[in-house]
Image (cartoon, rainbow, N blue to C red; front, side):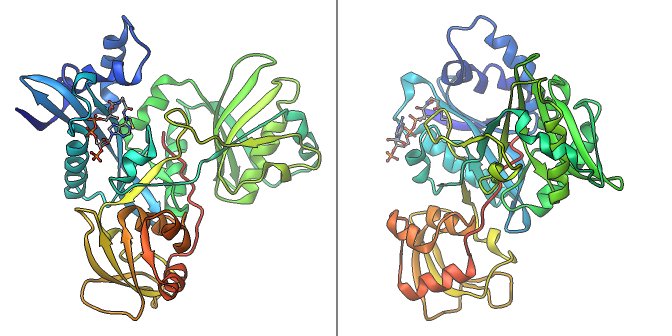
Length: 395
Ligand SMILES: CC(C)(COP(=O)(O)OP(=O)(O)OC[C@H]1O[C@@H](n2cnc3c(N)ncnc32)[C@H](O)[C@@H]1OP(=O)(O)O)[C@@H](O)C(=O)NCCC(=O)NCCS
């Protein structure tokens, strides 16, 4: 007989964590248990579930309580991770039961969105998830940016260890969270990993004392590579200042490798820049993040266009039902009683693709995630137009 229960604190070590080394690590590894003990503080407020059979943990899943911006509204988001089943207990439905339990637990705690990195998308599509866009990696020799150094810009870039600049770093991420669709913000207990490991430099662009751009990075050696994390800025000046800062690394490092948003165009950063910008979608090594709405409340009050449509949500325990979405007032009004001329049938993944702005109604139909008449497609396209999410801030 197996049952699901929540575990916390040190109990994680001899329950959920026993499945991590085999599922996610290199094996065998003598130090795995100690390494996992060291990570305990970074799991502190995670919602960790296990399936037990005869006192032994045979499956687990966890969720990090995060926040995410959905079209300008900041909502609680459950970042689901560490989904694993003991090899001897696979294909018996344990992960399926855990996912359903996790969704309802996180919804009870007020999380209206969920996100995860899939080992394989088809597994999670069944649970209502849809893939976002991949961020790009741009790789270039810093000399390509050298012409930027000829111009004096009204601002400055300062530089320090992330441990010293941690508060500035977190305050800026919180600000970007409020401004950028798709951006995510990790809870303090998890973000502390970046401060404690202190393995990053932090470059901060400021104008009149206000932070307008920020970059965390590490250098792997003299003449080697400068590995930058996500290029984050709130203004074009912030970006220009950070690019000038990178230009200063000519003949210090041979290459700069930086993560940029899907709608960033590094080939426009300087006149003769030689740059490769790429993204590879592959499973399980480099998947795009998948997301879903856990409740229709996620759409209430969200900024939108002037569409009005009736939808029926199918094949989903959490969202199933009929709704009227009315965006004629500039924000979405969700009711269960009204009617509209145009109707669509959507799966949770189909609705999530529209809500996050990554799918057009025609894509939803083409991918088998709904049935949408031409008229309903016009309304849905107006209501929830394409909008590139910046799935940054996974921290
Ligand atoms: C992926 C994993 C967690 C699945 O656990 P599980 O307990 O065997 O999954 P379930 O039995 O609940 O299967 C749920 C559904 O997914 C399907 N499924 C299970 N494993 C699958 C796989 N490897 N590939 C494709 N589909 C799979 C099942 O057929 C089932 O489909 P159904 O609902 O239509 O019957 C497990 O194989 C594992 O621990 N893998 C290694 C770690 C890992 O990749 N974790 C996921 C990180 S995102």
